[in-house]
Length: 296
Length: 336
Image 1: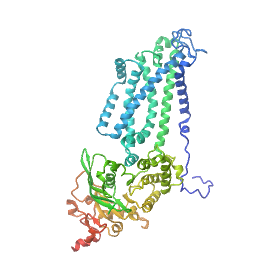
Image 2: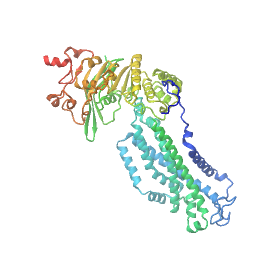
Image 3: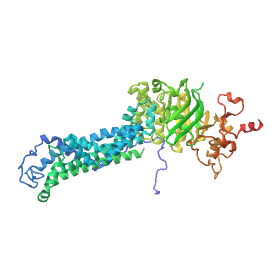
Image 4: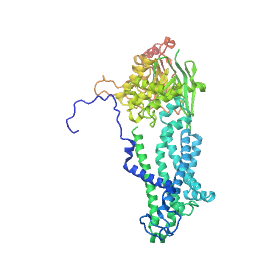
């Protein structure tokens, strides 16, 4: 201890000071907010695409064949002279939608199954856990191909097949978190106070389980967006309409990549940055709230 | 008449490896406004005993015996009564204040829930009552505490909040399951003294569960000493200390640190560990660790008996379950 001059008396510690910890917004950090800002721009552009002064994405010969980026044609033109910037924005609509629907399905189905099985345990839990393990051991790509081939490669079924793949990991996390909290005394205290199982799950467990799950939601959305790209590469993305996956797949031929790499590079960069931001934001949320949990 | 009368309570857990006899043949009573200490080391069945009373045991538990609270059979309450029994007539304080509050809900919200549910108080009334309760458990600046989350409070403060929650509906009986085990030593005394003074002020009965005989010494009217799921000794607090009969109680006493001991004195730990409750007991559960065990201790279970003949009818007879008692009863046995 440095022998500095210190006051000989300190304030009596009998009252715990009402300290103000740094706000949550502060703790999440600059990187988080930059990510969120980027995602906000991407989402805003996607939502506003119909009213933005963009070239018709399917219109050919807007620019020259494989024309490089220039003012007014920011991302250049593809092999048919279509506006790559416009294609990227219109493509984001379906890519983001697929990511959103997929993760929503994964969360609603997986989350509720996980929480309910973790809370009630018993036979139901055994059955649900078995289903999760089965889903996890099923080859993901085959399952997605199977569903889209049998039920049609519409936005919904593609999202549903990706959502189904999210059910098991999300469900297992939800179950594990539920097991942690269900053992805690505040659940027993709620039960003593007369709370029903439904009320305990919704009011006591869910708020605790949702935080780590929200981090996974962002990660999962990124994974679903990339997965859509993979499906597009196999030629089974949405049957009509544009998506990042289809755009990249179309530009992914050796000739195009060699002659005009910008056609693929721009949508790939946007996709990459979007997924990176989703992952980073999810990670930050998990770190900040995990630290909170530790301080308990 | 006692407020809570527990008779021949037995709790058995069904496990894949066979039954576990967690609690066997436990009886005790708590009068209105009285304090009862249940003492025993880990695995002695003290927590299971109160959890069975609170209806908190898993479905794998089989509960036998009776528990009568103010004329009502606790184990067979009608559903409508049960809803407003726990948390109103009988409340509980848990061992670890770190886990007995919901980390994502504000203190105020958690405090007010119970009163609003059981008493139908308006938000404003519940808030006023919550502030009153925090004040009662001596938390400074109660109104601003209501907006705080559990992680913003220290362990001692959190336990005060948990106690305040338990007191919300003026329970006639408060069960505190090792309320200070998870707290710093300096805070332990504050919490115990708080419980003691609340009991006196609110004329509330208290069951204080602890592994520390020293904790219950000045704060309870009666003590039940448990071991291996059984009652070893049960008596008025002063009798337990003045005339210790059971070797286990004696061993617990010599494990209490005393500030007046000369420096360098060694505490007397109890050798060995508690018995495996998965084996149906056929002998005194304490016999393997007992310094005074005789042959019959290893072959048969000593029944509870009273010190002296007249004491059986007394308000709180001095009971013990031992073939080789250490106190007054030893001489009785010798002369008889």
